[in-house]
Image (cartoon, rainbow, N blue to C red):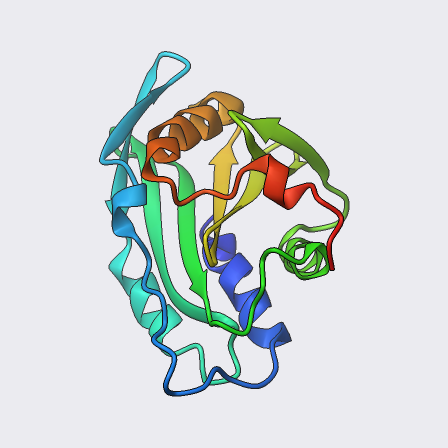
Length: 182
């Protein structure tokens, strides 16, 4: 899992072109979207900010589509069972356009993926025998959950995170992300 910790933001950083105008303020990651802890399928997990990733996001370069990013380690006791990445986009990215969302998903998801709805939020998922990868969008941001299939129920963890985040009003509902614009 350590090798893939920063894969989503790195893929998006390399695929971008241009940069946002200096006069437009960049959105910072709403860190309150990462819970301190949740219970997923009867398993209690804790979220800890992984500070070295913050430095990597800051050094992504001016051509990156990502404005800001944070990565949390998800643990049961001392065992790493997943990561949650939250990253904001520069203003030039329009997540209301299906084509832009699809481009981001294709950069992050290895191979094929399926789309599902979790608590009213559209989520792209790419399950493998060892790690499930989930991606969903918020207001000018995206989130990626990587969850091991041992030690925690990945679907229950995803559901617990989205249920925690839903009251914030920061997530794009499936009614927005499933429309056929762009």
